[in-house]
Amino acid sequence: MTTIHEIAPDLYRLSVWAPALNMQFNHFLIKDDEPMLYHTGTRMMFPDLKEAVARLIDLKKIRWIGFSHFEVDECGALNEWLQVAPKAQAVCSEVGALVNMSDFAIRPARGLSKAEVLSTGRYQYRFIPTPHLPHGWDAGVLFEETNKVLLCSDLFHHNGNVAALTTSDILGNVRDSMMAMQNTPLHSYMPYTNQTGQLLQELADLQPSTLATMHGSSFYGNCSQALKDLNVVMKEVLGGGEMPLQTRVNQTEIA
Image (cartoon, rainbow, N blue to C red; front, top):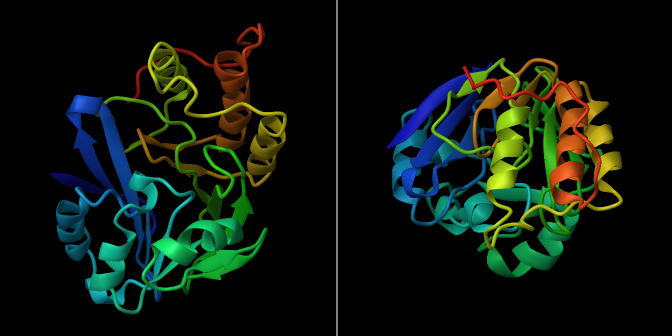
């Protein structure tokens, strides 16, 4: 079952709950002159997700299918979507278009360069490359400049069947989810490199007001501070250092 919530004007969160993984898989639909679906979901999720998207728009009107990086939940069902939306085109980083989509996608993808803007009509999405954040050489995020929404992929990943949108601090939940992976094969799922802090600061400088997260609640509030705090959490848990957690991170449950 896919649940649907509008988390910002014309931005719909379509969430698939996977109880076996204790995780939500969130996909975002932008209703505009040139509608965009951000995250395709896996091929297994495609039938349910397709039905949910069809409740919001005519599938044939989808123009853009975006994602951060090459991974099954990000773009696994891309070709299924391209088949039901004949005018749609994948949009990703230049690296992703060259090294992945050139062979994977049934139609050529549009590769975005740093700071390039994708217009869907009323909304403008600026592309920010974030190599190896959260994953992969090809990673990047989109920032919507009117409502200041950051489509941030796996950043702020946290587990549980949680609220669609919260104003409560999510960093405690993010840290707990990172810690829970430490003794599993997924312990190194998100690297902390010498570029991570700079990239997160670049995103913080955008002053987003909403974080559209792929796994867990989307967040509305002081997103700039949240991104700075995320750097501290990632450095502590994933960076292998002894840095204490000196932020406003707490264990407040998501509202």
